[in-house]
Image (tube, rainbow, N blue to C red; front, side, top):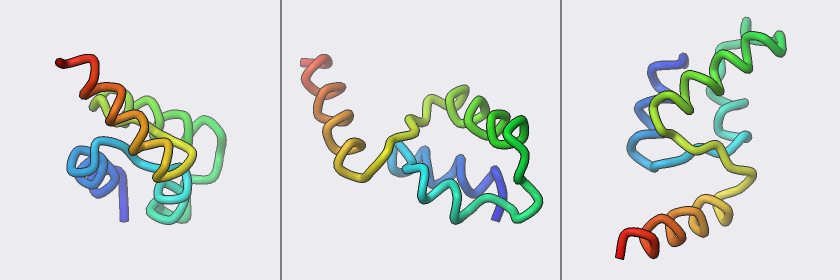
Length: 68
């Protein structure tokens, strides 16, 4: 899997966990610069990176509350 799949999943869900990113990153992406590039690309697509699914749920609730 690569960055395109991460972006597609992130857009579908609205956020990704660090665990999901670690599982889906290609094996050759190991340096901190490469990982930072991935995080920047996700941010540019307005995809939140969260610690856990619970944090993603809470983030979504806050965004919805702000839209009311």
